[in-house]
Image (cartoon, rainbow, N blue to C red; front, side, top):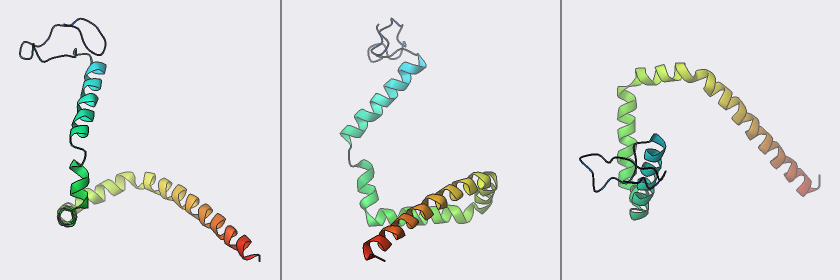
Length: 115
């Protein structure tokens, strides 16, 4: 049988002889998985959006997350300790961008008022 991605000959699995179209090469498998996911998302375009738009679902998801956080405080603290330096670097850069944007916004207001 010929792989639909790399065009190489391969021996299909004895369990999926008629259905298998891709060889076992990791690159071909990755492409196959991506194609399958894309096809599924095309068939189910509103699957995730409908849930997010539903206020009942949002409330349940928020409550579920809160329950998890209260039960696993030690995990959250451990994660914060592990990633604190990365977080500080991120926040420094974020605040730098925020202040620069606020400054340019303030400069525009001054120019518009003519002061």
